[in-house]
Length: 543
Image (cartoon, rainbow, N blue to C red; front, top):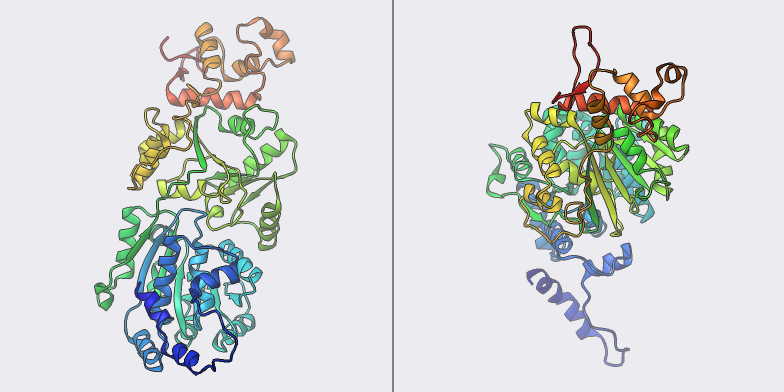
């Protein structure tokens, strides 16, 4: 109410109305909220959600937007140069309109909004959105020439830009810091803020130097945005932005947190013996339970993303499958991003970082080929689906190797996520919300509540039954030939056609069956002597 009262009681407006002659045409004296008007006229948004209104009001109030007298403006400018900036952490689920929370105040404020991103793809995507809205913006990156950068700095100093986009590595350079000190910057935005404490410690020191960038900017307010932030991430951000000799100790990090649940996403978990087989089946249009497209397949490494794309292309016979990772040339990245953004049935295999901030609204399926490293990362990845609020699917593939990695990992967040996903006695959505410290919500779709989770991995029964019938008789390759029903010279010589289980896994490839057998060995379901005359011949663990 404080903000609204300040706006509605403007003495200048009252005096102007009193001076109008009575003969003048009657004007509409009904006051309209400038924030709502800007949302409607500039962005086509008919209304704002309460949390958007709160975030935007915090920014505008801190920047003095609602102060109109000259004395008040001078006071706000003095506060900007001497007082520490206000700080807010905004935790909103993917697709909840985080971008509007800094784009809308950015077009209302006279000073610059600085957007700091951890990835170039995020900057390019946000720049595209600003350009589409006709908002003056520019992007600074390390790959630009000196002349190009100087032109951007000149435009910013001349007041030609409303938004300046960059990454920490570029802004932390001495010349960049010098330019920032000379610019009137009202608002510093940190996108995907959950990466700052995690990536900064692991492999990107520049992220931990963001406080130096903020100190050079002297903004009115700093807003950190993310879709997921556990209590630990929140505490790490608070510690990072609170310097020992800074008066900001008296200004705690203001947290605006919405429920991270995405009701339109249905969560499904598949225990696997061969992830490539299950992935191929899930994306095969002829499979009765095939997932809808467009689809993203998240992989842990670049090699895995490339391998998945190549094998899917070969097995599905489709050219609408590409891979994306940081090792690609810039032109190829842009080409693939543009293709996927406009595709309505494409499949993209990508490393985990691709998903953050990429605004493709109609992704119908997200497949996690590798289990995410934390609940926050998992919700970030799965949140790429269904940004248009229509139904979407999140499917996780996990196997015995994931179990072993979780047991050996010193990062307990990974183990907790895997336990939550593989627990057959609890709702997946409820487990995820509990891990985030959010209250349980009614489940709108998961394979536990829908009673649709498979009782065991595909191929488990066929392989185990085969080795129960023929213990210590076949090695991995021979068993794969029999189970796949291979017609070859070795099959004719060995008489494989007459063995139990011949062709029972005909829809599998030989390599996929071999992978499944080895996975069962790793899980302890099968054993294979390493010494003696039966070396390499497989039998069930119990025999």
